[in-house]
Structure formats: structure tokens, C-alpha cells
Image 1: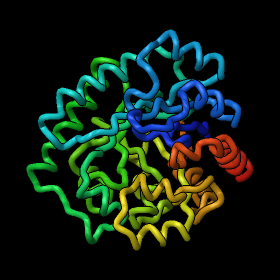
Image 2: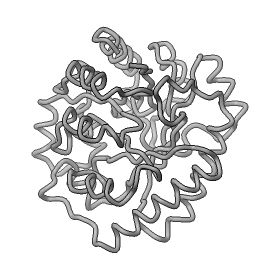
Image 3: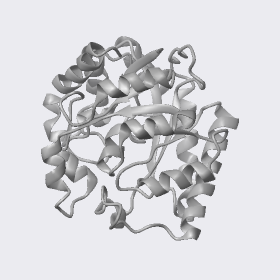
Length: 307
């Protein structure tokens, strides 16, 4: 396997740039580097500034490359499309000018990726992880979202040469088994790849090992999380938003939770996965003083089992 392990700002509690108590992006880059990571995601749009020279200085100082930029927004509403396209332009024009990460042998598309995540619907946020309770989109709403994904992915590729990957996410309208299967029917691989997240799969009642195996031919990029089973079982009894569950500690360092990463390591060898895996551990940003410890433990554990 040619696999590189990267980090993401959500490990420091950064899921919304407007939240209070966020650490500086310079600190996130510095601590990711200290923990051993060689790559980093940009995090939510607007967190790391769209200042190429300033960002490149910090990346170089910390021996990091950018692995992905993210659109974490409402992909359904027609009224939001213009804003989404503007994000594509801003993010892609930044990442193509930063130092590129090395394309690993066997990696089908080069990083940095554009990660597309549907988000921003209260009615789904409160039913994250509950497939039987969650409202599904109308056919019109689903078709709107698929059309918008195609527009964004084709724009990123044709104008910037940036590969888009769709990330099923707890609390959005692409979360559960039926929705991921329909996504793969409606968005061909030549338009956009798939970014599966082990933690979101488990959170939303799917087996990460089985889904990574079944989606191997669509898989461009992977996120790794781990889940504290006691905390998970607790939040599943509550009417709670996904990130509020994360603030309660439902995500934990890799190797300290319920997800079987030794089996995942064997599987990725079997399916011949190459490229990048990004470690995530969403948390309350007020607890980010423990982020360096946790991301270091995640990195060390993955290395210890053969990644």
C-alpha cells in the first residue's frame, strides 16, 4: 500500500469558522506537524485564509501539504448554488497554487481534493445516526442536490483540474445506506469519487469494513475516526445535534474506540487502496488543548499496526 496519513482542523474543534473559542489556524498547522502528519485539510471554508503567500509560508514552515478543501454547506437549495460555485472558485484557486502533495503510486487522482458535504438542515441534524427516524428528501429535492453536485464537480475539474469527492456525513441529506447507494447510482465515478468516513458510517448504523469493501471501485479518499461506544450509546438516546454529540466526546483517538482498524488495514491491502487517509476527531474547541495529545496518539497507533 502507498498510503499517507493526514490531519484535519476538526481535530481541534474547527467545524464552523464562525464558532467562538477556535484555535488559530497557525497553531493547528504547527501541532499537526508536531504530531507527525505531513498533510492537512483546509477545514471549513473561511477558516484558513484565502491568502496564498501567507498560507504557503506556514505550510512550508511545518513541512505540510494541503490534501483537501471542503464545501460543507447546503447542497440542496437552488438559491445556494451561486454561493457554492463561488466557494469552488475560491477553494480551488487556492489549493492549486499551494505546494502539491505527492501523488502516491497507484493513486488514481492527484490531491488536493475538493470534498463536497451536504449540511445545514436542522430536521436532519437532530436525527443524525437514526435512519428510521430521519426525514428523506423529496424526489425534487434529491434531484436538485444531484444536479448541484454535478455542476460543482465538473466546474472544479474543467476549470482547475481538481477532483471532487462526495462525503456522506451524519446530519446531512447524504448519510444513510439508502442515500449512499442512490448517490452512487446518480453520480457516476467519472464525475465525482467517494470519500467514506469510518466514523460517520458507524455513527449512522453501517459497518465501515463492509462499506469500504463494497465501495472499493468508487473510493478516491478516506477519513478515519473512532467512536467511544459508551458515549455513542448515550447520545443515541438523546435528541441531539451531531456536533453537540461530538462535544460530549463521542469521537476518540484512533485505536481507543469501537472501530476495528486492524481489519481495515487488512482490507485496504486487499482492495489495493493507494493515496491519502485523513484522521478526524471532532470535539468542542474549548477542549483543543488536548488535541495535540490525541492526534499524536492516533498517528502513533496507525503506524503501530502497519499504516
